[in-house]
Length: 134
Image (cartoon, rainbow, N blue to C red; front, side, top):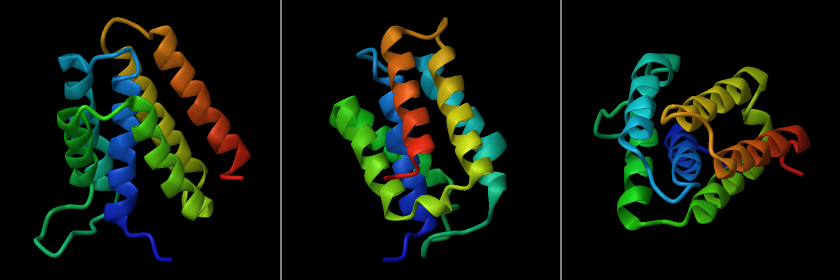
């Protein structure tokens, strides 16, 4: 099974939503932080585009907004990322894992510090990366 950048970035949107909503609400600061990080770090990362010419990095924002608008449970959103990660854990090299974790941590701390639920989700992400998808 081949994973596309759109699949990868969509799963990241669900992951970042699960971090932001882990305390029961997505604050404007969290959503704004994600948008800034996408623009500054994820869009310049590589230049893949979908059939309509949309930079694949925007799929992070698209799936984040979809999960928020649909009222998705944070646990379900996190599980969507885990499923994608397990398809091809080698695709997530050390630098990609660091960038993902740093983005998640920045979102969590953007609205006045980390809540216990956000810290728990960050620990889950860290454990997933350490286990390598097993």
